[in-house]
Length: 106
Ligand SMILES: [Zn+2]
Image (cartoon, rainbow, N blue to C red; front, side, top):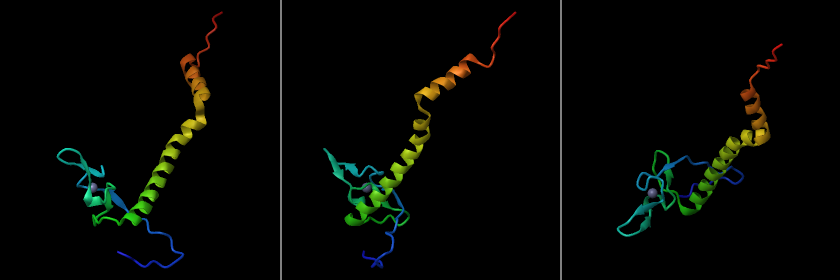
């Protein structure tokens, strides 16, 4: 399935969905051992809606796009926590624990 893309164009980002046969696991349980799922070329992913299987070279590229996107999402999730740090968190909980009440009776 060659699409004959014009040079200079960005590679197409194909929307993927988990393979329904192996449920995204890339392998299916055989009688005695796991077998590579043939429905998704052992990737666990098929093309969204059409359920087509990508060729191996296209699959590698599309999985790379997916991995890069996932890593960006993970980095974004980790980002704010890292910026705060344990020191800041300690101070914050300390302030909350002590409360605003500074009662010095007279
Ligand atoms: Zn599969």
